[in-house]
Image (cartoon, rainbow, N blue to C red; front, side, top):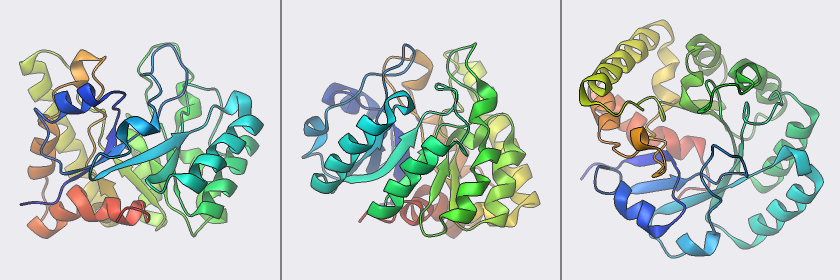
Length: 263
């Protein structure tokens, strides 16, 4: 059996997880926590997934309430060993990755040896501050915190070069192709799959180290119809111009490097 770690899922309930498994091939899962926002999924309860085998969890920080959030997150990091990262919703909140508030969150992540995860690229709802979500602003953190990993999610869609060039130059940044399939109609979705294969293959040639920084993820969430069927993400992974060993890295090993606390 192939080891497949989905590095980017959104389960709020156990029913969500059951729906996800109908179209997923993964056997390990990283459940990304949300913040309060009108277009994001609800905030899950850690106790809901405490006993789910091979599921890891993240925290998330509302930057508008930073001091209270830092205290809350630190309490959870001390008592819940399944937490492997902290998520920042760039774009959904108008902060750049090099903002002093985010530096404080990164200092906490560094203290507890967990990874930093960023929403990068387009936001789900129009009108959000997309420029704030550009991965290029992560570079200062990469230099100043070399001992922890940073994940710029969603390939920084559609400004791919911003994140892929960072992956070539720094060893502590990773990205994933989660969230790149959102069409409801089969024909349009198949075209998205082909487009993503072409884009990734193009950049694998331009930036050879990308094959060790790219991860499999789906961005599943049950409230968005185009995000429920995650089978297309395996088609992307299996169609890349890579050896079987290199595909295994994208499906599993790269995520293990990005999240050092995953067993």
